[in-house]
Length: 338
Ligand code: ADP
Ligand code: MG
Image 1 (tube, helix red, strand yellow):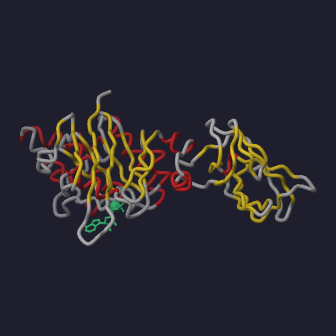
Image 2 (spheres, helix red, strand yellow):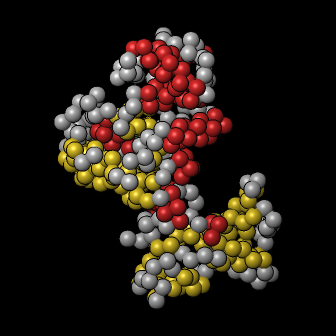
């Protein structure tokens, strides 16, 4: 695989703000890869995309496509496609004309045929004469993506493209869009604040906080091996435990726990709720404070020795409120302290 996009030390300050919106960001995206930029609102995701697309100029750093800096190029010269939250189809043009608009690079005679090809690909074959407002939100977003892909961009940028869709439609549209991007070998960056969306959509995830990249890795890396407390907590529930480590073993309130790194001294550990186990015992030190039935599992809050632990069990393992239980670990703990 070859690298399509490389970002080096990218930095952006806005007027009247003392903190950088994006600060010394480094990352790269391989040809054909989908990268998700994940982080809370205001962490600099959109600003990063806008600099890549050429809508904002960085204050420092560089953006390269296939080894060439694109900072001197106009938005159009960069050949980057963007899909936004609000579909942005031309409301007074039918679907066919919306698509044809993106096809200036192919001969006039082929455009109508090609528009139909794209509509079929997004499951809307034969609907070229429909107006955008005659479609559901999910359908409009698929046309918007088709229009972006029809321009044959080198890179597709998607800024929270599913957030205006209701929950059921969001999942199916997301799967459909991912399938389309992959079928076309497209390289894409998805911006989202939704961790489930990032985990299921992307090949790699970059987690951002305060304009900085906290960690870049596969979805499994980010979820199972978070490198900072922020990443551990942003990707779903976790238990952060402070402990002293020696020879790869941490002494904790839950007893000795094996670690994923051979470290010494003070450490912060992350244990996901599904990595803890419960055992009912009349004289156990823990007590069930809360129980939530979530269909495919139970989510418990357990108080043990003055600490609160989140524990997920199977739907077969039901404990009652105030029941005495022992919390223990069934996996290695991950060190998140840096
Ligand atoms: P995200 O997309 O992650 O929610 P943004 O990139 O939109 O975050 O914003 C990052 C930071 O930059 C925020 O503090 C935001 O208020 C600020 N910001 C974004 N755009 C502008 C702008 N045009 N002028 C001033 N500040 C801005
Ligand atoms: Mg944004």
